[in-house]
Length: 64
Image 1 (cartoon, rainbow, N blue to C red):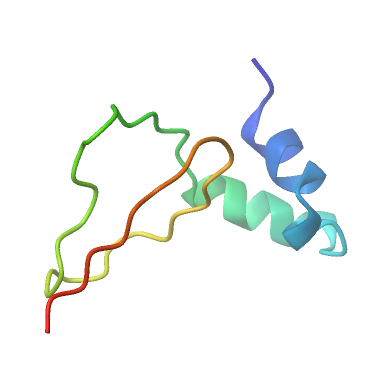
Image 2: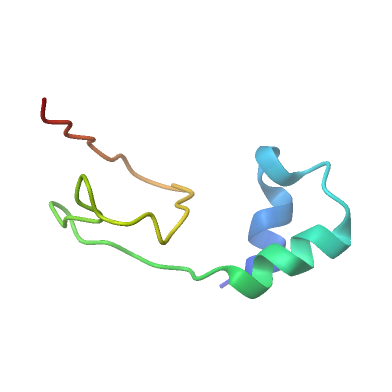
């Protein structure tokens, strides 16, 4: 398994970041796997996480 700093630095979004910023992000990052149909966050809940989807798909349900 690749280390988080390598995973982040390979992503297009982060490729132009200086290594010190990749290191900072790595210190805050977690590699998490969610099961199919698992609720990740609920509308109205505090935003405590920033998600980067590397594989798979997600659905976003917004209720009006």
